[in-house]
Length: 192
Image (cartoon, rainbow, N blue to C red; front, side):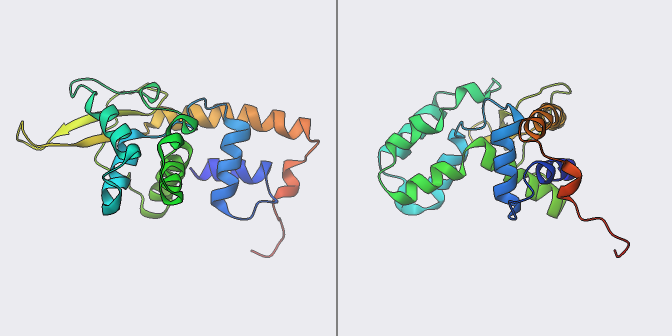
């Protein structure tokens, strides 16, 4: 994630806020096709956390999607809807904000923050595949067949390697296309 921050600064030094810079870098350089998908499970949890949001079209839409998932399967990003399809169900500006916050690119940034600032992963997900280059969900049981924890979204290590590689290629294209020198994005001096 430190590498990803550095690459984003090389491409977009004019964007000061880390969040905005990383999101712009994902949009411009990553080639990540699932970045604008909305995590049904994370949106469901966000709506449940905001107690007034458990009745309505948006809640019903995501709850129905998650309820269709089979507990013995691994769920991939293609099982989640795109932002433009989900936002149609939002009945208020607050719900639109929740939909935006649960897009994969926003969750990537949240994941980044947990790794960098707390040296931990969010949730209870387990990286169970050595070579999986995309996020996925798996379900967890809490010792009791009747008590299943919410689906856990995992961004595996192989995914981080993959997105760094594709973003590096995208960064090179962005720098060439805009005639930018990445070295000018960083201040270098004797004083440190």
